[in-house]
Image (cartoon, rainbow, N blue to C red):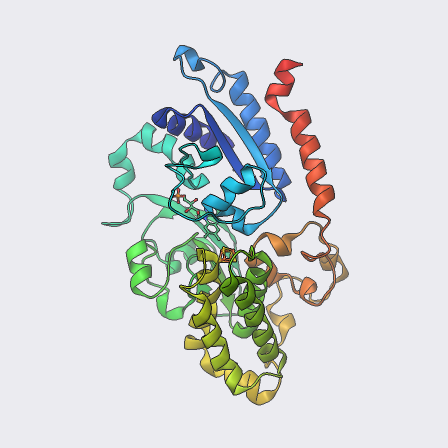
Length: 395
Ligand SMILES: Cc1cc2nc3c(=O)[nH]c(=O)nc-3n(C[C@H](O)[C@H](O)[C@H](O)COP(=O)(O)O)c2cc1C
Ligand code: SF4
């Protein structure tokens, strides 16, 4: 969205035309102000070039695009919570059916798609279906973005055919940081069961990742080397899910709270052997019993980490302490003053950021709790008002 927001807007125009929708919305988290600015600018340019608005290029087709900055909630990515949020309500998932395609935004038929999906449409139209389906695997066609973060030499977004392996991606990304080995990683973000070195050659397509017991999810590959305490990483992810649980259903609202308590005990060295089983039992009370997939996702990393690194959980209990040097796994100088001065609520933005943000964990710096969201959103709204293409046209 930063490098080529026009691809998204072109995709929005094409897909809206396909379903004869005259109003599309692009919803993004309010914290990513730089992306918001870039999108507003691109939408304005598209209006000015006549690609949006009334009677687009004489086609008789009208399309307005509204870019909406949410107040910053992970759950607002879930399609029905997103619709509630767009309608001005608190973002919480809706009961389905009715599905959005039947009764969505303001109870009108609505199609909700991921930005990557929509942004890939212009290149498919331009190059043809055969071009697209020639990439990928037998059942997972095409290419996609793989986001590499954590202990990797060159983190970033890598566009590659589905079916590429992590080993091949690491070749492009300069490998795991020097002097260390890969310990565990997420194939699809922190809500998917973790992988280890054993899956380095697993094709990253939907079927192969599923067969290995995980999911391709968001293709957010978070990589952790041998300096990382798996209990600590899982605790940070779980804190994120506890914070982002929308509270609508009891298993997730209460369960993520209790998971955090148990994990903190184990990680801090005051846990018992019984806590490890209690952890799994609590996961069992959440997964498959929650209203939406956030609850399931919150348990994935825990269950898989206990299965793959059981001895590490036991070690914490036996030692009464964490056996790892936390400074060794940090991506910046541990405890450095400038690190705690980092602005914006990154710890709330993404789980991987939360894991890396050691300073916030120590109770210092900017955490989700002390982030002044109201001021940021007011600034955003003012920015939107000033930059709204339609406001400018009317003026
Ligand atoms: C807790 C939760 C968070 C989600 N967050 C996002 C998100 O940030 N972006 C997104 O595109 N889809 C997100 N989704 C998935 C959407 O509900 C929906 O399935 C998706 O946008 C459909 O797009 P696609 O079919 O183009 O992949 C989330 C789902 C859940 C359960
Ligand atoms: S699973 Fe969690 S996020 Fe989803 S509806 Fe229930 S409380 Fe909300």
